[in-house]
Image (tube, one colour):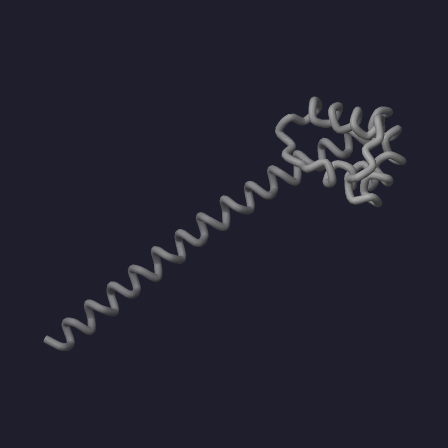
Amino acid sequence: MSRLRSLSAVVLLAAATGASASSFVVTTDAVVRAVDASTNATSNISSSLKDDKIVRAARDDAASFVASAGEIRGVQLEGAFQHIRQLAPQLNATDDQLAQAILAI
């Protein structure tokens, strides 16, 4: 009887391990797809904003905003924030992230 229990335990352990591995693969695939989609969207947006006059005009305001930890909010930067959010409503970025992105363009 002891052998039967040991064999049952081994079979259950193997089944549980297989289930955990397959769920890990599914979870990993989902995360990779989500990151890839987000990266592609951000890349497409930043490349389209590279030549945008409104965004380029806000660079000095963005530098002041970042340097002052958000205390200085220039008019051109506020306009750029609105413009970017209208162009990409799916983009969930904070003002600080957008200001840093403007500086990186």
